[in-house]
Amino acid sequence: MDSFSIGYVAQDFDIDRKSGVRQLKDVDLPEVSLVALGMNPQALVTGMKAWADLLAGQPGAGWTLAERTAMVQADIQSIADNLRSLTEKGRELTDTKRAELTDLLATFASLDAVRSDLQRILAAPTPGTQSLALRLALTRRKLAAQGILED
Image 1 (cartoon, helix red, strand yellow):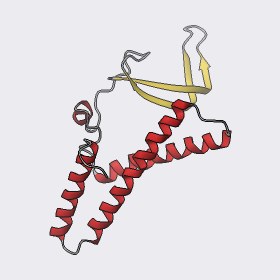
Image 2 (cartoon, rainbow, N blue to C red; image 1 turned 180 degrees about the vertical axis):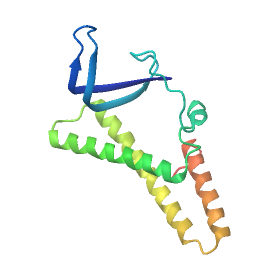
Image 3 (tube, rainbow, N blue to C red; image 1 turned 90 degrees about the horizontal axis):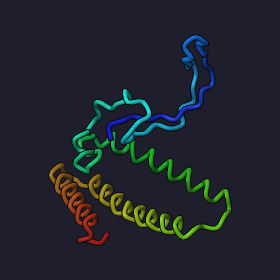
């Protein structure tokens, strides 16, 4: 996926009657995506932070902890907004949506283990202990992700 796609709503524009070209002056931009085949062949993504990590199936692996935290916070806010929307609609859940929410609940349950690991790391009295605790926490998380260890 190396093409860029946007979804926009033109708020203000001019049309050149001679050429038929529309010049956008103001737009709302509700959607931005990486796609396999974009509408405009010149809208290509030529660089991205940690591109090699993404291609290797490890998105964000080369990012700082602060950058990864910001991404997670944005995702969690989006999930919270979606859940709020579901409850406001007051409709019954489809089997598909129920399965999706069950998976989400399991994911959030695993975050409790991450929080516990962070609390242990921060409570460690010496830098050597912090380093060891961090390695143990990362190893536990990897093993849990592989299904070898239960959280």
